[in-house]
Length: 152
Length: 268
Image (spheres, helix red, strand yellow):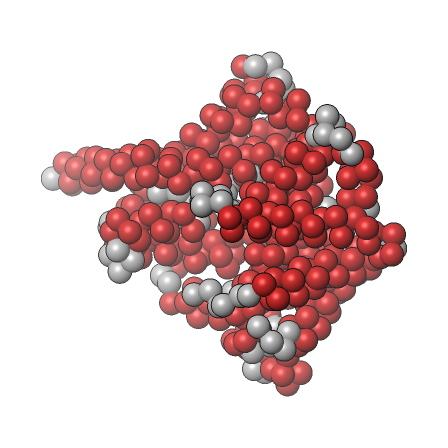
């Protein structure tokens, strides 16, 4: 299913993804790419660390969860240097990181559209019911617990 | 992985087009629907592939082929990590709020069991048999796919069911959750509760629904919404697979049999 990816490919993909974020926020938000460069480099380093941890720790924790956890720790107010970490990474817009992901995601499902056409329309409707009930199931439990705690 | 240039040129073009259009909000009845650049990106991305428009438009045919489609999959994984870092930076500074909300964050994972409760009876009504168990056990991302595949085999009815929901999620999941995140605010459920619900265990679906949600709430709630979403998604990443194995699969099986018994009784 996966194609073989070596270290060089990872480096290439990280650099390209970083560049796409810079282009996106330059066009969309007018953020100067040079100004955002240190921030995106810091983020890229965290990405590399996350991939590395996923690779060496034999516990099934996805790289996405690793990088979130690392960035969480680096941005804790009590972590030394967190203010510098935040000042630079704040130059990278949150939403600008999402556009390239979804562009790739769209292309990557391109050859699966036939498969979807083959699925019965019933399964498509059932899947949407599944998504909706997962979402509202969690939302209702959260609403209940948060209001019992008096948080909302 | 060689010759990435055609894919990269295509994606740069898509990103520029989507960012130029920018976020739009459409008033829809009592609420509003927020359309973010990522939504246009996934749609344009699908459109440029050979099976959709690619074969009809010469330039696209040259740009996107099998190789590019395959590499896109790897790129999704890497570019998601940049978003993961941004999510982490939203949780860190808000850590106290997140810890205070801990009980809700943990318990809402059980809300996922609502999925079979609602979906199984409807699936049976639609005429599905044991496919219903696979299709409705959870939102069927990779961990569930793996567990069901191992337990029943991918070519079993349960396997077909789980594959169906997985496929639909892969193709339209982000779009669907983007709409849910943006429209759900009109139900009167608190944005913080909705934020926790967006962490369904898929990075891109969570991103789509939580950023749409964040765009429709008052500005001072935005960071908390994104922090809860990221934490909830992280927790689902850890607990999700166990809750499928130990809770959702046994429960869905029991519930499926129960409904069928009731139906056959009622039928006679």
